[in-house]
Image (cartoon, rainbow, N blue to C red):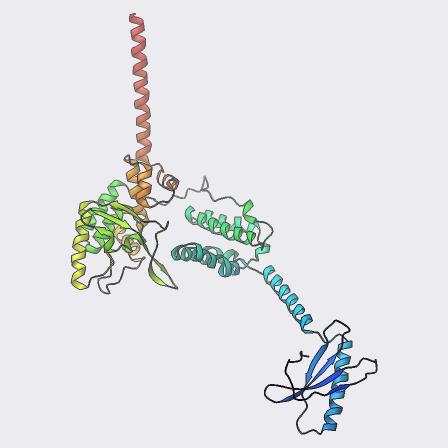
Length: 436
């Protein structure tokens, strides 16, 4: 059944047919734009309501008398279908389609798994709000640590116990605490979005605590920073390394830059006269776009001073680079002339650390080392935070004011000294009283 077309015809023919029930279907001969002829059959639904209509095409080669008889039979059968409720108007069909779409959407909503929600909603939204690198790292964590355990659970069926069981698995398996915290943070963000989108009527994270190290776990904490002695060994070992790596690692040690910021450094960011460097971008990698330069993590640029020895290394590196082909980037692959891949410094430092006896050496460890040594030796939090590019000074304070044996001993010494001075003063006052 279809609605009639609003097409003018050269002539029209109407024939009223009376059914056994007394309803009178009407037929009308009409013509399409291409010249072909069809018959429109309509059955009235009463005053003020649109009629049921259908099109009927007469088979070729029939006489007018046969066409009339066949048309009459088609009209009668159509009227019977209308009475039986088998025929719908266009509006009724649209309403049925709308209701069906709503049912399908509801069913899909009820079958929405954690992985499907993350892939279709959470990650695309994250790419709009965060850098490509952040979105990529979130996806890696989801695929490696979250999807295998809870990815196929439907959101509406997700329970706090499922998440707690996953987090306990990472806490007791010897995995670093930082990994468990990352998993917790990502699941919390996913469930928060699902709750706001009304896909779940409760947030299971309300009964999930942030992972903490077990008292009896005995799992050693990953080293966050190098000691001064380790940094000195590292700088000594660099003397026999290629100029590219000498310069890059020295810059990481001296500045506390993120590895992506270092690789994304442009020559226009280096001020040889003022011995300063401006960080206004970072090199990131994603499977979809490959390596590309993006904005800094907090979207801001910063300028800071660099020691003269590192600046002289940069000058020599630029002179060497110009012999093979000048690039706008400071650190490039000597064979291709393209910027280094973000993973290259990580791989290099791992081998260099093994050579120097520094276990687990990686670029971010040098960033922690800069802050740790600077703060330990009296640098104020605000200045260190500014050089590191932290948008919140509390981040610097939380990440780099961890205690070590040297500072614990120093605190004890300060306490004993203060107590000794107080005792001496008290004894002196008491002695003077006795004399008087």
